[in-house]
Length: 360
Image (tube, rainbow, N blue to C red):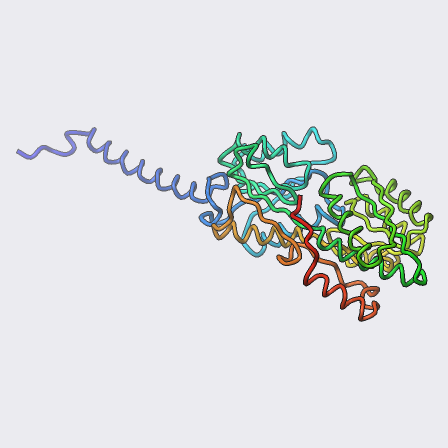
């Protein structure tokens, strides 16, 4: 005798419940496949989310602005959801904010940069192994932390700074009638990543003319243009025909001082002539060149690799002249007015620069 199906209502309920669970499971699987907090290499997510944490604020016309520009370009090119978080000037707020980004699961990748953030990432990366980090302009110490979820990007700015010093000594020496060139150099802080610029600049200047004197000082801040301006004015008063600034936002004060003194300045990180040309043409006219650290290009390339699933976490990429990570800006009219022999000497030096060591 065949039993009536409706005589066993629990069987009908089981069938209905089973279909419901299958539908729910499918929906959950679909949602999770594109969830921004899911682990992975970025290639599997339809619209990955990437955050850039800035330990400061945008508007420096230099380092942080370049990083934001690279992220925005990557967002357009690679179809990413991007967000820039400005951490402000209070260092005590940086670690909690970065930890919140890593813990939230709202982002597939968290990017941050500068020497000040390395220690924080080394503490947070092992705590949140499911998160993925890119650190730029610094490298985590993989011997000191379990940082297999961190990709480090470092630069070799000394190579381009050497070209800037060579250029500066030639220009100032020529303008001073063949006398021993006097140059100035202002750093934001006396730290290795800044000193690498200044050391390269000094080496290049002395390569061009061993008699060159380079007067070096520090603003002791990357966000104090008034102090940097006062220091630059003092250096110009001591006879410096040009000042090279490696001071982030403080460097804006150096550029102001150069315009007021009628002397030259070499900028840093971005092509500062192009940044100043429209809004401040009088200041731009005194920018001879800039030592460019292509943070935007480096981040864009790293994000391309990540999106394709090829970025090596736990590894370090080192970028110098040969890799296009650094260069000397050539957009300023003052560059175009250089004697052909000076441009040729710089081109030869860029092709075969002296050995300068790895970026610190």
